[in-house]
Length: 78
Image 1 (cartoon, helix red, strand yellow):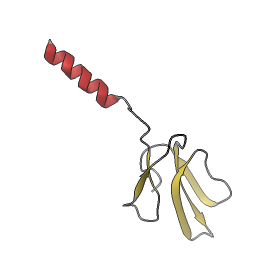
Image 2 (cartoon, one colour; image 1 turned 90 degrees about the horizontal axis):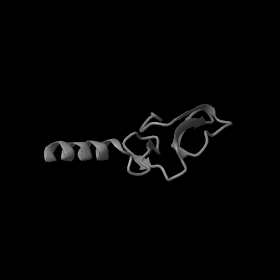
Image 3 (cartoon, rainbow, N blue to C red; image 1 turned 135 degrees about the vertical axis):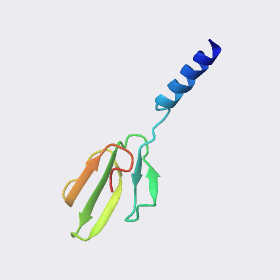
Image 4 (tube, rainbow, N blue to C red; image 1 turned 180 degrees about the vertical axis):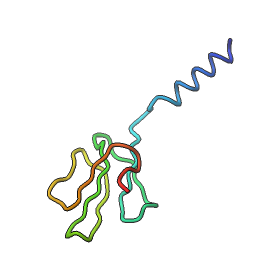
């Protein structure tokens, strides 16, 4: 019975989101990431002047840029 209870506790902890943990790419290089601050629940990328890629976290999707993409899962702004 103790094993079952311990297993349920571990599964519950693993399934809960114990904090704000959205991860996004934040540079043109995909190996550099950031944890988004609380309140910024979107990853985005867009192009400026159609050649410069900008990535990061945002509270709302940026507007007015070429090829803007917003998403809300980890590392989705590829």
